Length: 148
Image (cartoon, rainbow, N blue to C red):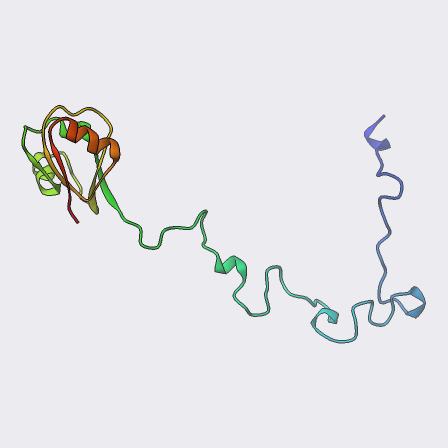
């Protein structure tokens, strides 16, 4: 078998319909497209996705993957391990963290994450805590206070 011997299966290919070539050809006059209307005209029909002037589906859906949250909360996150360097009984909030040099930029509310270990009792004031961060702070003898 050679590449030149390869042919489509018998009966799988059909001859293209010759339309608009007279009444005896079977598809004369209106060529099977009907009498009037947009789809009977030359170049007729609409582009893919056109919905008759209604806002099409591809424009109604968001552009990127997934549906974003409308009022998304932005948090400045910090792990518990960064707080371990602070002295005991310190009040931890965004301003004290910036003064200590732990936070360099403050973008949104403060959220404490639970990565690392903490052995110092601290009074932490933040907008949100993960469950692991809350348990580690309280296990070290500190307190968690939610501040809006």
